[in-house]
Amino acid sequence: MFDGLMMFLESLAGFMKPMTLFNVLWATQLGIIIGMLPGLTATMGVALLTTLTFKLPAGEAILILICNYVGAIYGGSRSAILLNIPGTPANAATAVDGHPLAQQGLAGRAIGIATTGSFLGSVVGIFCLAVFTPLIGNFALNFQSFEFFTLAIFGVVICGNLTAPKDPIKGWIAGFLGLFVAMIGMEGIHAHIRFSFGNVNLAGGIDLIPAMVGVFGFSEIIMVMKNQKLQVVNTKITRIIPKVREVLRYWKTIIRSGIIGVFVGAIPGVGEDIGAWVSYDFAKNASKEPEKFGKGSYEGLISAECGNNAACGGTIIPVLSLGIPGSAPAAVLMAAMFIHGVRPGPLIMVENPEFVFQTVAMVLLATVAMFVLGLSMVKWLVKVLQVPREKLMPIIFVLCVIGAFALESNLFDVTIMVVFGLLGFLMKEMDYPVAPLVLGIILGDILDKNLRRALIVSEGNILQIFDRPISLVIIALTILTMLSKTSWFRNFWSITKKRAVGLIKK
Image (cartoon, rainbow, N blue to C red; front, side, top):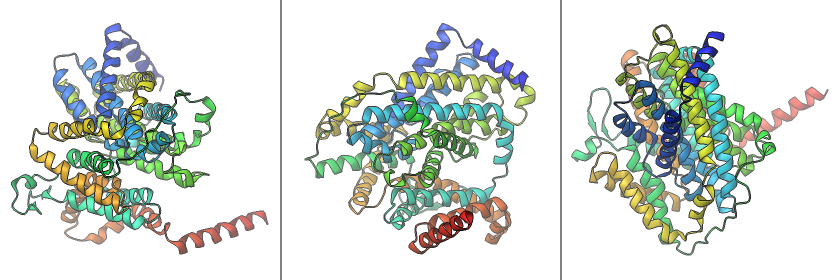
């Protein structure tokens, strides 16, 4: 432990150079901007910077990429709060409470809370990255095909519950519709083309970015066109930096969300978006004021931002310890490590142990830069709300088109964006949540590949899913989550709780 601390301090001291600190600032700020723009995700930012930093020394290049990654995951909260359009999928949960706060004239405080939550979540992620990399990495190794399949179902059910509290069936329908959309195109085992109807463009599947931009961005444009008489939100910035007692009030939520975010992020292939949703779900269930969630809850906002930024540290854990990326941006980051001569994996603690603590120092610098830059220029950003939405939407439309087109320079992706925008509009009109649809598209590939792989290994015996303890736990949690929304289960739970309290008092 002492040797690790010394390597961490030496690594941190080695980065304390003017040029290095300048790289930290501009890379984090660029990440925040990329995260804010709908369609320009952390994956895209890290991928583009990988090519631009190819000739830099390994330490400097990877530091820039990590700063961009951390900044982008946080930056998406800005557009989620101000425009109700998550800049990245990881910030979909942030919009649930962040935008209602902005509509109440509390955008500045919402951004301050989100920034603080992101910072504290990253701190938890840094601690776990430094201390528990071998432990969490080994546990994540126990997740095999059946576990990933059940986890994908669990993620859709949770998201459906959270985004459609009045009628969770609508949330589940939206989520499973997203899973179906993910089935379009070549399947991942034998590359058999499904549901393409002879269309060559559909044979490659539906890309997440155009679909997400359409559902969250273009549908919002149509909503504004339909309801043109919308009131402009007049936001007065009274305080951006939250008071210490406002944050300490939710210290249990911060610690819990941070740990959940790290754990979810450490599971290969899951990522920051699920970390945010699961953290949000646990916060709502444990809250003394669950009725405020979805209407502008500070606790809900801070839990979502803690979860997704803690997952950044979590996603790097399997990269370093197993050589398996925890998310799409982490996959690009791992590729950059190989390009620069670093071999992440089980042997890294033997071959290059100092690099693990260099990575911890990099994430710490990125987190501090994110916190400082995140609380800067907030007053200018909040003025976006004071612009009539009818005038703002043409700009958003241009960004949506650019975001959809920039992924593969393919006009078909713009068509996908428009189609999913119309679908998102119809879903909103019928009071169906759109977030589960996007999450279903994200999890669909994980669900499909792992179910097929599990059936191949088990020779078609699906019942083997019940022979695995982790799968059984996830299945039980899924069933309990679904039952928790039924009236008879609530009555049963209420009676049981009252009887238990009575027995304790006796």
